[in-house]
Amino acid sequence: MTEHRYFPRISVVIPAYNSRAYIPDAIDSVLGQTYRDFEIIIVDDGSSDAIGDLIGSRYPDARCLQIEHGGPSRARNTGIRNARGEFIAFLDADDIWLPTKLEKQMEYFERHPDVAMVFTENNYFDDSGTIDYSFKLDKRILMKGNVPANIFLYSGVATPTVIVRKTVLDEVGYFDEELSIAEDDNLWIRIASKHEIGLIDEILVKVRKNHVSLTRDIVDVIRGVEKNIELLKKKYRCFDESMQSIIEKKISVIHNNLGYYHFIKNELKSARVEYAKSIRHDPRNLNSYRYLILSFLPPGLINAMRRFKQNHSR
Image (cartoon, rainbow, N blue to C red; front, side, top):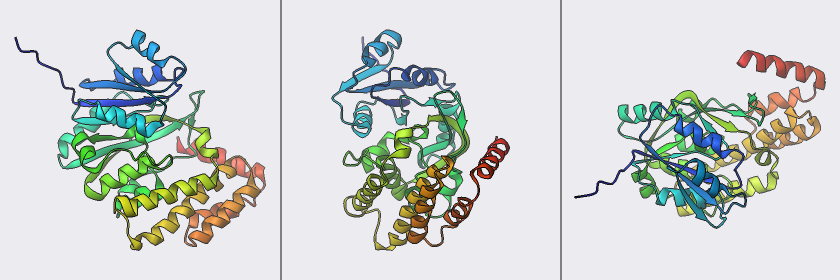
């Protein structure tokens, strides 16, 4: 009798590094999906907290692959190479999908057969479960005009919101393991440079705030962006010299984001330094001018304005 092997429609790839405290919530959010045709692949990236034992005992139907520690790009690539699905969905071990996420994305693929990748809106939450509205980006801005340039500028595609066709990844390549910063943007740009991508303008993913990434040395961030630019120019040939103005805007955005990080912590002097750098790289960055001016207001007034904005954005 011939054995029929099951091939799921979606392979869910979850890299995990010392994430035992969080990963059950992530996996449970997959198991709670209204769309059911998937497999779960956890890639244990050399963890020391016995994630593999937890997966084996609590989630026996999930596949757990163990590798030496090499970072999230290598872990995701391991998952992709071992995937049996027609589509690849990414989820980080500390993030959560809302129940209709897969269903709505697969409906989008059905309606748009030429689309290579679909991502969604997301929000951010902390360990207490509180939603943080400070870092929300309206992702519709990514879809207007030059999509690869917009992704480069705004870094607005959160990896746990993405589903991409496996054939597209086989064509453009996987995550570039030379990068430790912007490796996800690099891949989305390569996909968007050759294919149509789609956005579901609805929050379907909750992303846990990573305080380490927010406080990372700006020099490291800029070097990471510069490495990404070099790869996009020379290795992948997605960018040419006509992109120089976009590159300056990107560096301006980095300083603007760091300025905002200082601003919300009431570190107003540091915020002013970053906003000034932002304006030097892109004198048309009106947001940096706006917050530079606001940074001269009394902290009490700034806090009152922030509370008002948060209350009216819910």
